[in-house]
Image (cartoon, rainbow, N blue to C red; front, side):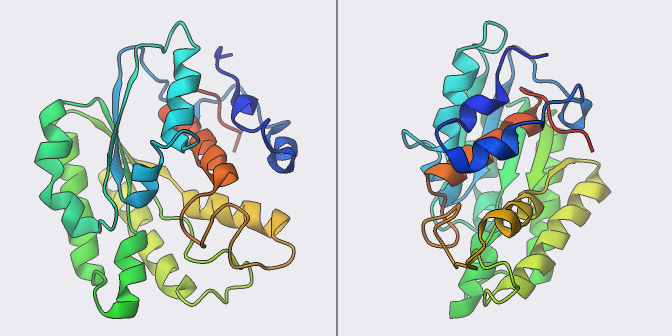
Length: 241
């Protein structure tokens, strides 16, 4: 078993400690363990950018990795920019990702592509999918392993009444398809959020469980995403499927 403890992300909140208990298993996420000298770039929008805050998921991950003799040299680099959509990420891919020669790239994008549709400035499905495919191809061509995430929520209600639920599901399915077609690792945060919210959001609130506003992570949300990210990169053991 890895020296990193999966519960350390969760002990600050009683509400998720019970979820973490019993999740230990001998199965590594995607059977791809983290390597001691990996350089991991997290590519995304404001959720990733905010992950660098003191209680953000990237800061939590850095803290956990620093405790491990094996993984203390693993580098975590944030390439999150507020408001970014897939076309924005693609335009800065060379500068912010390819040029620094990462070994792993976590692509966590999509919320703004859907959210901005409300103002007519979202990303059309074909543009979104084509851009995502090019991003994955370029990262893979540079020799890095890709972990493609689905966006999480645009409202935390669990009865399907968040205004953009239907569109968000369509775009999440695009992420899943691109991951499958490119043989990239998928981290389905959308599914993870929904499963958790169905258990914990008994009042069907639109925010305040894992997010501050339905999308951006609160402290618990950062711990939850940090845990899922640690599983995905292979730093800690993931639950058996």
